[in-house]
Length: 389
Image (cartoon, rainbow, N blue to C red; front, side):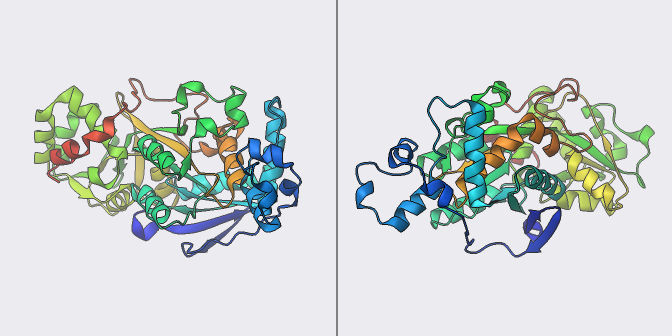
């Protein structure tokens, strides 16, 4: 939740440990299962160079084995491939990820993953574009703390660039059984990444300051006199995720709408969490835009807030990014975790919040919902200037 909200959460059999962000993440992995794989099988999966394997020391062979895909026959069924992946992931024993999702979502999913596979997970919650900035900074330094990333915004472009640099592995090339079997909806596979959550942009209001009868009936009503000085808005530059929302309204309502909106004196805050804190404190009566999971998290803590949905909106697509197998400390556990949250079972767990929409059933999206358009994030400066930033 902003820089101050960066923290680490470990999930294991329902318990949570909070601690400092990792410097050098220590790895303890049981390698015996993977070391038993034949050299040809490892070479086929990209784990060992078959022409030089006889020259490698045993420790190096073991290290390469830990990075390799589970040795499975090219003709293995998705269920057989999954079993091989489970064995390899259990040998690694844990997975660590960066997440833009609220803590409760990541923890709930980690608990369910542990219950199903006995593999521990831990995560750091980081908001906005800070996740990608942190990953890139660590990658440039040659350190790769996160085995995978859950984030929205311009992640497809980021991952494509990361693949070129050897930082990432394309989700489509990772051999995930849930993709190979056809279980996961192909329309949401973005190539280098895959969508795990579609969260529509909504509004939130302070129940101490605004009555339900005074809520706007459409986006034009944000220009009403009753909202002058009362709009709480996450600054567009605080996250790429907001770009698609404002671009949608710019294309529909034009520059004049934003000229009038700016005259309303919207209060800008650096991200969704600071904005919700300000709304809860009464610094405004209505926040736009926000996400249901974040608002519900605040409501659970006693904030005087409620959700409000308008039609004709867009949303964020939370996507999974895989760290390169050659760089990740727990590559197989990462792929199993990704496979789980992309499966129907795991995706239901990940989206089990009020207002949550699983990728397997999008009927709950608002009327007139439009997914973010390709290339929309190139309009960052255009959108920011609409708010004078």
